[in-house]
Length: 216
Image (cartoon, rainbow, N blue to C red):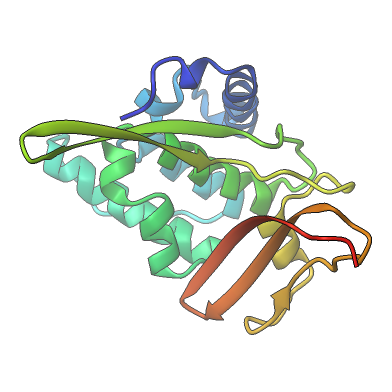
């Protein structure tokens, strides 16, 4: 579950406001007004209108009932189309914005999906960098409830161009087998090194390593 007050962080508030602004601008001709990121997008109707506007193509979906099952089916079809347009592997989409998470109004999944759409269709639309949400993971062990906090990254820290790591990977068309790393100087004391490792065409793994380097 989302940690209390995590959603109220200034960067998250700004990110949500900017995403709502972008969606409403794109859908102004449809007379659709989004006010709540989670509540207005969960069933796929607004997402369908958005991807149709962005691609200029209709999805031609069959008429579905407004039951929970019908809503989930529509959302699944819309997300499949979005994933195809974004060109992301199924495993990546399932990890970042699965159908069940979007339908349950999960803020992390919803924001990640919208950020990916902005990067694909409006790369010059600036989003705040370094946005993170904190989840509280609770489990019962030997009859005792235990909890831990887990940081979920929504937007990466940016470089001087204002583009995050994932966006840079796509914009520079790097090979899937490339390994990108930062060089360390001998006289450096402390470094934060990011390795972006492309393992296969099906999976992208980002590992942040923090360690101390002794002077040479």
